[in-house]
Image 1 (tube, rainbow, N blue to C red):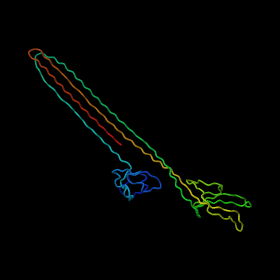
Image 2 (cartoon, rainbow, N blue to C red):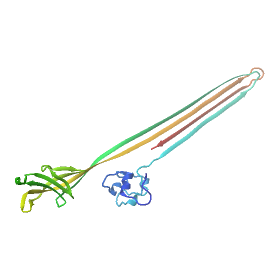
Image 3 (cartoon, rainbow, N blue to C red):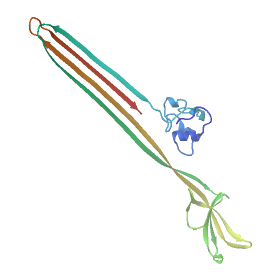
Image 4 (cartoon, rainbow, N blue to C red):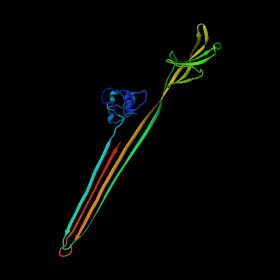
Length: 258
C-alpha cells in the first residue's frame, strides 16, 4: 500500500509504509537509505538535504514487474513429382510426434530482523527526581529504607541497600551522593536522610519481517509430422506419385514475476 498522493500525511504513515524505529525521525527516510527504495516510484523523495512530508506523496515500499515473452516458429515444405504408366500399386505410411513440456519454479524467502533500543534519562537531582535513603535513630526504631521519586512516588519503604529498582517498563538507578539533612517531627530530630541522583532506562525490542518471492515458468511444445505415399504401375503406362510434407511448430512462453 502506497502513501496517499494528496491530503494530510504523518510520520506514523511513513513508519507504517516503510518500517523504522521509535522515536520517529523524518531523516530516516531519505531515498536510497535503510527504508526507502531508490526507484521511479519514490523519485520525489530526496537522497539528502532538505526533506518534508510533502516529498512522500505517492511513495511506496515495494514495486513489481511482470515480463512475458512469446515466440512461434513454423517451417513447412512440400515436394511433389509424378511418373505414370499402366498397372499400379500404392504404399503409404505416416508418422507424427507431439511433445509438450511445462516446468515452473517458485522461490520464497522470509527474513526477520530484531533489534533492541535502550533509552537512558538522567541522572537528575531536583524536587521531582531524586533517590532518598532515610535512617532513624535507635531511639525511634532504628529503621532504614529508601524512597524513589520521579515526578511522583515510584517506590517507598524499599531496602536501603538497593541501587536499582524496576517499576513498569523502566528501571531506576541510584547515582552519586547529592545532599543530606535531618528527619524532624516538631522539635524532635528523628534521624537523617541522604539524597542521591537518580536516572532511569527504558528498553524496547523492534522486529521487521521481509518476504521475497518470485516465480519463473516456461513451457515448450513442438509437433513433427510427415506422410509419404508411393504408387507404382506396370504396363504401357506407369504412374509414380511422391508427396513429402513436413511441418514443424515450436512455441515457448516465459513468465517471470517478482
